[in-house]
Length: 181
Ligand SMILES: [Mg+2]
Image 1 (cartoon, rainbow, N blue to C red):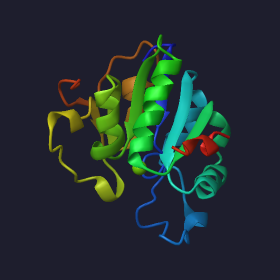
Image 2 (cartoon, rainbow, N blue to C red):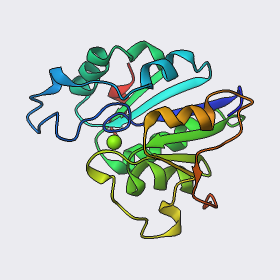
Image 3 (cartoon, helix red, strand yellow):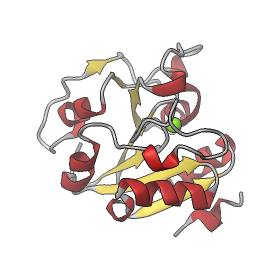
Image 4 (cartoon, helix red, strand yellow):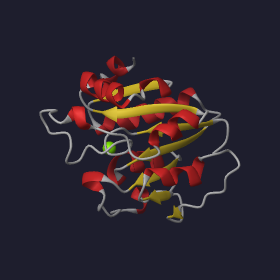
């Protein structure tokens, strides 16, 4: 990671555990907690951080408020489909052509795939409902793979740190506007 890196974070099961905690009717949301190390990582990392999440905008914002991390992101983008998510990644890249992009997420068939398709570095957090998914194609293979959020420090904790996470080898290389708050 360098000072001109942009980190794109997914929310559900990437920054906190949704699986088994928040139900489809949003009950249980009051019990959500950030993964160990997530708060400090967001607080200490000085490069640009963007949250891109799929879901109900008011509920996603409420989660960020419960978790106390809303102010750590320069942009919060909320979409309703996976296709829109990829479109948002693309727009961010076009907006900051000079930057190196990292995507941190829990789904190889969504944010990891999209990040790879756009030439971004991708970090898979093996957590939640999709933790056991296996890449069906090389394009779904992340650059790095973590079991715990706190391991992210070893990959992009400081500009001079050398990657020491598990490397997966090669990087194979809308109404969402209402979500901009
Ligand atoms: Mg997720």
